[in-house]
Length: 141
Length: 435
Image (cartoon, rainbow over all chains, first blue to last red; front, side):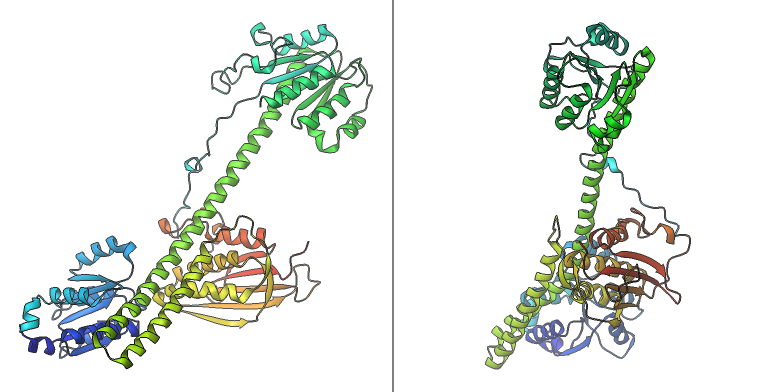
């Protein structure tokens, strides 16, 4: 893997909060990613998922969103013929319901989850873990 | 909707079970020793059960366990004899001090001393208002009405009388009845206390689950706000660009302000007032606060709130109680509407129920656009412990709303299916609480 690869990857960010989406995008830009798709909820995101020409290497989605939430999006992605293997990071702010969420996320093969608020380091670690990249590869590549 | 009403086992509640000790204690006030002995022999024939005159009730033999199934049918009278009013008052005083009051007493009317039996009972009732008195008299020396006048109308259920000569059966049955009455009243009082304790606890629990529901929404909001703060700070630091920092700080300040306003609303929710006072408040502010607190839930379920008629009205009420009512109603409405829906709210002044003072009350209507309530279920929805939400509901939401509106604010609370669609709750409350 090389830096070139990272910059060519497309990451989909799904969150109903514009600010949060912007922050995640800024973080990812600092890690070297260049290409992003943004969506406000699961339904909007799923339209991109259905577009077979659209490249999507990783999905980072909030759990709680109006209309279609993150879990519905995850289920839809996992049952999609071409996309079922797309790495998926779930973002949540409800630590109290963590156990319930981990259980249901595992059932749907979530790659990792992050609890809001998080620092860039955590996001970096999770993103690289989900993409099965090593830090070295990303930095020296 | 055929889900059976959820029942809460009252025995599970703390202190719901208290041992009740049946009170068999009888006082005889009689100047004739022969008559006193006669009464004693009738109601407490076993010599062991008779307490000698001068023994204080402190040294009385310990009670046999009362109320056990095998013994409950047996009389277990404990009898104390007083030969004059002074002795009688002494025994009463001692019994109160020892926490072992008499259930009833036989009082001779003519005691051959400065006061008669009726005046004695009047004095005794000042110390021990619960004792049942049975007057025993040889003559019709007092009419029932004159006794009632002396003892007071509020004591009319605490006394009875019988004429000499009496039969053994009459004495025994009077004693049994009076003792049973005393104990029934006492047990009822105890049950009422436990019930009110339990209902207070349930109200508290309901309040807690409301707080928990709001808490989840607050947690979500806080997660995002903290993300704004942490994210912007970190990005600004990493980039080190002055304009970026300025932007970041502005956003952080805004997030901080929003967070503290969310927090202050949440704190208010948690304030439990034991004796809430009704003060002048803006009714619309209570409704708006409930909408604000539910905003996350509404957003998630894609529910639109429409204020059809929204007159600003100031009323004498308890703000926090009203917020609780509206949160309950909104929660119910949101629960039945999926995946999207609408809640209509209207507020307008109206005439009082008597119909003679226009604009002296306010009418609030909260209507959802859900499926409505089936006719066969409708009569039960206001019953405590009835819920259609399975384990998610306590079945106390509506009864508590009703209690807050009707008991606390002396208003009216009703619920019906809207002719077009959904459920409509109508709340009417007086703008000014009358004295």
